[in-house]
Image (cartoon, rainbow, N blue to C red; front, side, top):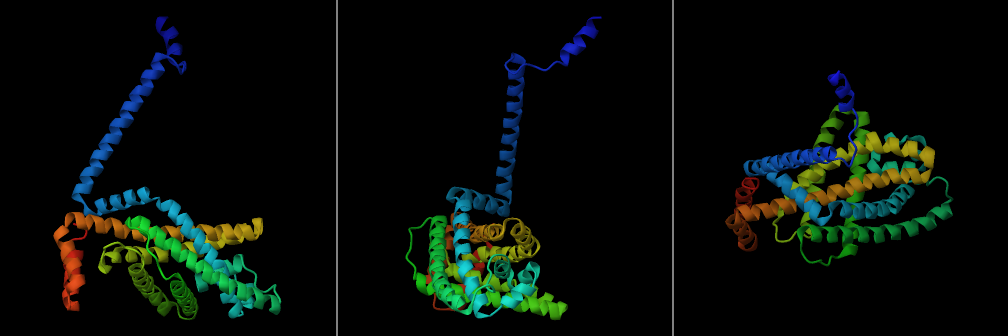
Amino acid sequence: MTGSHDAPAASQPVPPGSPVASSRRERIGVRVRAQRERLTHWFAELRERSGIADAIARAWELDTEVGGGLMAGALGFRLFIFMVPYVFVVFTLLGSAATLASSSASDMADRAGIAGVLAKGVISVDSLSRGNQFALLAVAGYGTIVAARALIATTATAYCLIWRIPKVKMKRTAAAFVLIVVFSAVLWLTSYLGRLRDAAPAPGLLLTVAWLLVPIAAWWWISTRLPHGDAPAWALLPGALMFGVAVEALHLFTVYYVTRSVASKSETYGVIGGALSVLLWAYVAGRVITGSAVVNASLWRRFVQRHPDAAERVAAAEQTARSRLHLWWEWLRSAAGLLR
């Protein structure tokens, strides 16, 4: 009889303020803290054993310290503001209104990347008269240069913050024209590869794989022109490699997600819905840009801490070496110990 009366009492809920509930919360808190300490200890040991794990942890810590997400948002907004007048100018000059009207968003993404998606989902160039197109073309051309200058200034400021160096002055007008030329070349090559894949799938696929080297080389060259502290040019290669792989992933993200998002949101919300989808793409692109700098800065600082003598030799070689062979030999010796 006693057991039959005790069983229902044991299944009754415990009041929140009772001593039993407090002790239960304390036991859970103790278990959570113990598990957190074990994970912290395990990850610290992993960082000691693995150079790659330590490099990833350092990049994560640096990104958190400098506010990588906020900087990516600022860069993404500047990139979107640059792309809107730029795409208007390009598709107006090329007279591609008929192509826009007859092509789907996925076709435009495959042929011209995010620029084609933006032109298809956001910008309407076929609803304007010739006079209005000419007037808006002049305004959009000026706006493209101004937006390119602002994008370069924001990128340079972000890199100064990531590398923790004072703000540097750049020739933004000249850099803006270089940015427009590089962006146009990438757009043309993307469009050419898209047509080549349609005409000859096998060679087009091989060229698409080889295309991975183009953003790597281009971003490495751009990174050498952006603020990067006292790091030599070879120390910027890891970020360029990450950028090239991320650009390919971003293109797939554009073709398989952004195009559908632009199409669905444009039907529901109009131009604003399509613009929001492109803004999401711009934020991801900003994340890639800041991420490449975070990778380079964290790896270089780790290298300097672990190999101070080699870092000094590289710096001295870049300042005094007369032989390119000797400089590349120093690069190979130093790069071999980057993650050790």
